[in-house]
Length: 263
Image (cartoon, rainbow, N blue to C red; front, top):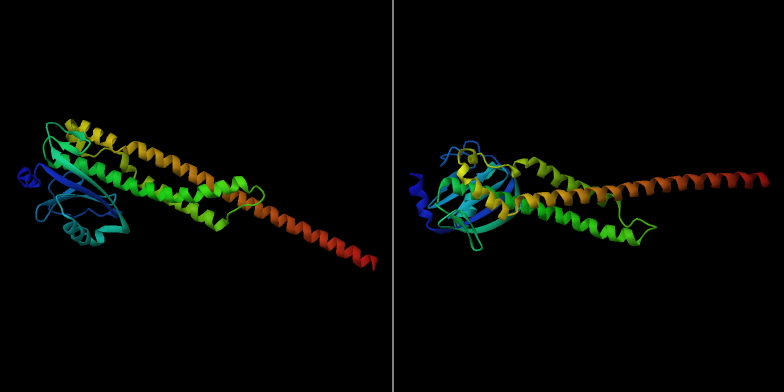
C-alpha cells in the first residue's frame, strides 16, 4: 500500500527541489507510485522523488549522498544538464489541516497527491529562481550602460558586440520562459482532487509564483527594449559616421581638383 510506504517519512521531514537541467525525459520511468503526473517514484532505502518535465527533481526523505547518486543515475534523461544547480529546501510536517506556517508546510495527511502538489510548487519556484538569476545578470549589464549613456551624450559608451550578446541573453531567457508555459498551469491531478485546490492555491501564494513570473516578464521587456534602443543608436551613429566619411572624401576630392586647376 502506498500509504504504508509513505509512513516511513514520519511526521516531520525535509523536501529539496533541484533544477538539474533544461528538460527531463519521463517516458518509461517505472515503477510509478501513481499514474497521474507528475511522476513520483521510490528512492531506496526510504525516500521518494518527483520528476518534472521542466527539469526539476523534488526529493522527500533523501539524504544529500543519495540525492547526488540518484541525480547522477538519471543520466541521459536529463537534457541540457546544468553545471550549477538551483536548490530550494522546505520542511514538511503533519497537522490538523493542509496549510503553510512560518517554519513548515503542513500536511493534513502524507499522501501521494499532497506530495505531488508540494513538488509542483517547489519545482516552479526553483525554476523561476534560475531565470531570476539569469535575467538579473543581464539587467546588471544594461544598467551601467544606461547610466553612462545619460552622462556621455556625445559618444556611445558601448560596443555593438556587447549589445548583441545582451539582447541574445534576454531573448534566450524569454524563449525558455515561453517554453515553460506550463509553469503557470495547475497540475492535472487537481481535476480529480478539487478538495486539494485550496492547498495548491495557498502554496502558490506563499511562493509568489504568479507575481514572480509577472516580474520576470516586466524585466525581460525592459532589458530587451533598452538593449534594442542602444543597438539602434549604435547602428545610427555608424551610419552617420559613414556619411561623414563620404562627405569628407568628396570635399577632399573637390579640394584636390581645385588645387590641380590652380597649379
